[in-house]
Length: 123
Image 1 (cartoon, rainbow, N blue to C red):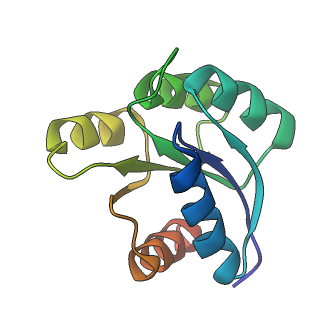
Image 2 (image 1 turned 90 degrees about the vertical axis):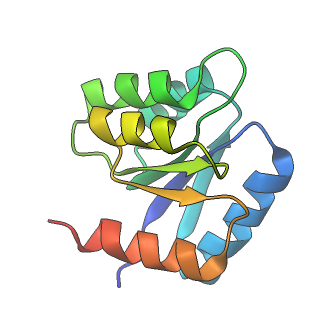
């Protein structure tokens, strides 16, 4: 698999650190991180990542709104929602607006690998 450039979006530094370690251990590059939706939109435009992991609940602008904005600019950008357990309605909404996949917290390396493989296998 080709090395992909990924933007990690989460308001928790611990989650950013964990996701970054996992993504890099899978052979990909984390090109940056963002702490809220507004930051995510700006970084997506600036860094042009191959994919984005997007937390839902964040200050200033949540992940759903940020996903909508990013997909307006780049309809094919793979966005992977990171969510806590028990947020099925939110995940369904995210998928309906164009997110490609989701990962439930706590974040598991095997699950991240599985989702990234699926997302990058899509044409």
